[in-house]
Image (tube, rainbow, N blue to C red):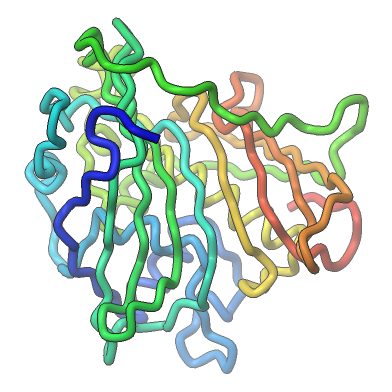
Length: 309
């Protein structure tokens, strides 16, 4: 595929993490006391929650608070406008788990290698930048996780770029009740805890940026809902075993507010790739709109067919 910016590679970004970072992440997305392998560093099976790498492009290799806007002012992509990171939201995310993540980056030289897959002009609503990010041990060139992301730059379109291809859809099975219905209440302070992982976007901490973008105030990180759904689904469907998830993806459909409750509907499809079954899911705010659509995961199904967290 060709087009403006396609194939452009950003400078490699050094990233690192400690066991403490993994404990914080698990706490922030809703890990519970019966999942000590995510919450207690001396547990014999202590492990990273598999989606942790999505935070690393934000966190980098620091333990300090980050100036989000400065950190996200990336190298300009050739032949496209310079987009304003103060008005960006997630479009969709997919992650593939290729190697288990070590519980600390110590002894490794990890880096994010990111390239542009496409830059699309959606007219008045804005522009989309699709990227692939690989988490790589630079000493061995082994890829641990591969992330695909779409960043939507609000009201930054009409520059004459391509409209882009239609997205592939993964709807739930027709005329079939969900196999699991999970509930995830969000505290008023959840965004302030989650941002300590390294995603310090002011949009999620104080009302002013959200109001400027047309939201009622501060909104939840899209990746909070995305990671929380991954956790709740892995717990219900895959027995909380990080080895039981191979892929996870969803599209960000509408904002979530602090204090909302998420309702996660999950369907088995019966379609398998090796030992992993394709799962479809939809996440909505209780009594409100769908916030994560196009949900799909590859999971080893264990335990009861039906359940509720």
